[in-house]
Amino acid sequence: MRVLVIDDSREFRERIAQYLGAAMPDAELTLWDPARHGKPTVGFDWRRYDALLLDDTPGDGQDGLEWLREFRAEGPVPPTLVLSDSGGEDTAVKAIKAGAEEAIRLGLPVTCHCLDVFLAAEAGFAGVEHHWAPGMTSISDVKKRWEIHERRMTGKINTADVAFYYEPENFDKIIKAMAEKQVSWSPTIATWFRPLSPSAERFKERELSILNNPKARYLPAVNA
Image (tube, one colour):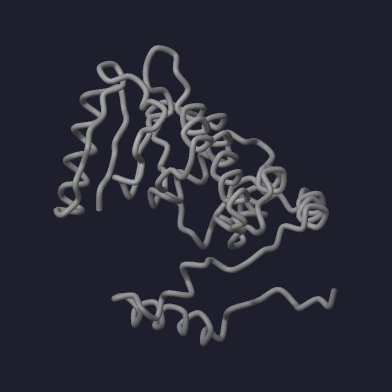
C-alpha cells in the first residue's frame, strides 16, 4: 500500500511512520511537510497513492478539510483519514460531513457508527448502526456524551452498562428525525464478518451464554 501523509508536525509524521511501519511493513510511505512543500498543486498525481492521511490544520491557519474539498474538485482522491491532535466536536462534524458529501457524490450510501443521529440525518446518511446511535444521541449534554463514549472505548465503562446513561425522554424526536430524513437503523456491519474472525468461537460462546441465560430479561416486543 502506498500512503501519503500530510502533516505540519515533524514529530507527528515520524510517529505515524513508526506506527504504520510496524503495522504494515510493506507499506510505502511518503511524508509531506506542508511548511516545506506547501499544498499539493493542481495536477498533483493522486493515482500514485492508495491512501491519504491529512492533518486538519496543515500549518499557517490552513484548513485541511478545505484542502480536501479542493483536491476532490480536481478529480478522484484516494481514501482519506483526517488527523487531528486538538480538534473537538466541530472538527468531527466537519469531517463527517465531508466524508458523506463525497460518498453521496459517488452515489454510495453512508452507514456507520454515530454518536449524533441528528448530524447523520442532516449530512445525508442512509443509516446508523447499533443502539449506540439513538442511545448516545439521547444524552443531551454533548460533553457528557463524549466522556461516556471515551470511557467505554477505554474500558472504564462496561459496554453492557452504557444504556444506563441513555435519556429515553429524547427518543421520540430522534426517531422522528430518522423517519423524516429516511435514515435507517442497522446492526453493526462488522458483526456480519464475525464468522471469518479468528475470535469467532469466542464470540459464539459469549452470545450463546447470553441467549441461554435463564435469568435474562428482555423488553417485550411491540408491533408497530
